[in-house]
Each structure stands twice: as structure tokens, then as C-alpha cells.
Image (cartoon, rainbow, N blue to C red; front, side):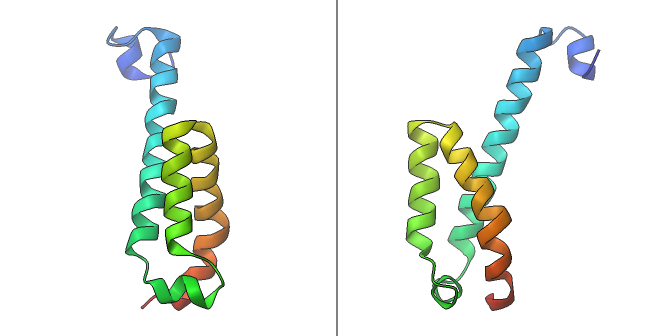
Length: 89
């Protein structure tokens, strides 16, 4: 048994694992959107990025496809966010 709530019979095996993955993907995507929204516009401009573009891309592709939005959220968090960190107020 991989997960305690699966062992207790709350969620059937594979469905429980898939549900956990979906929730994790949603959490990462929401984290990326909130982080981008709370970052000052000037931080994005200093590194040649657009705050509105990142929020729109992540949110739009998450709604439209899910997977591409999650990948964009990962790209934002792993590649763009570290370049913004030194410029945050």
C-alpha cells in the first residue's frame, strides 16, 4: 500500500494515486500564478519578461489543456522565478 488513505479504503488504489497527482499539479500551477501575481511588475521588466504574459499563459493553458499549463508553471518556477528573486522589492 502506497498511501495510508488508500490502505484504509477511502480511495481505490490507482484512482487514489491519479487523484493525488492531479491535486499536486493543481497546487504547483496555483503557486506559480499567485507567485507571478504578487511579484512587482518592475521585477519582470528588469529581466525582460512580462508578468501578464506568464499569468495568462499558465492560467489559459491550464484551463485549456491542463498538462501544458502545468509544464509552463514548472518553467516559470524553475527558470523565470530564480531570475526575478534578486529584483524583488
